[in-house]
Length: 230
Image (cartoon, one colour):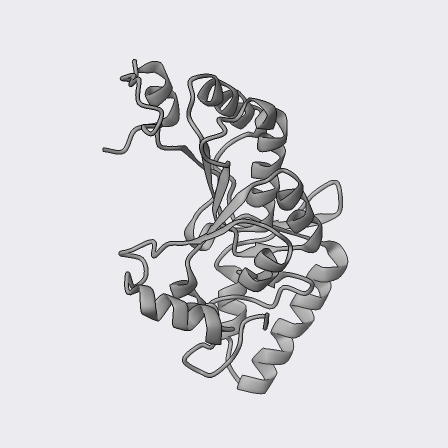
C-alpha cells in the first residue's frame, strides 16, 4: 500500500530480534516521468536551442519544438535554466531523511533529472553518518547526470538503481539534446566504483531481465541511435 512518507514515519513499526530482518527503504519522490527536473547552464541552453532548431530544419518538422515545449523552461537568478518539476523542498527532504534514519529506515530517492539527483545528494550528505549500515542510500533512475554529480554520488557511497529497459525510449524523439550530460551511464557508474543495481520499473517498461541486459549492453533505440554511448 502506498503511504506518504510522513504517514509511514508516524506509525509504529514492528521489531525483530533477527538481524537479518531489516526495514525496507523509505522512498522520497523528488521528480518524475516527463517532468524530470533538469537544470543546465545558460550556455548549454543556447546549444540545446540551436540543436533543436537545426533538427527542425533537417527533419522539416516541428516535432522537436513540441518536445522541447512539453516541459517549459525557466531562467533562475543564478542564470541556470530549469525544466520539469521538483516535488519536495530540500529542507523538508532533510527532515524526512533525518527522521527516517533515526527510525532505522534506509533511504531511496526517485530522481530522474540532474536537479533532482543533486537534491538527493544534498539530502544524503546531511544524514549519511546516521544512515543504517545494512543497506546503502540509493537513487532510483538517475537518467541525466553531469560528471560532478557522479563524483558526489561515489564519495557518499550512494547506490544507483537503473532501468536499462528505458534505453530504447531515450532517442531524440523523446529526449532533447542536453550537451555535457550522461544518460543512464551504467558503465561510467561501474568504472567510478558506484554500486549499481537494475530493476524494470514495470509496468512502465518490460520486466524481462534478459531484454534489460541486452539494452544495457547495446544501448540502441528503434532508430539505431545510441543515447550517449558508454
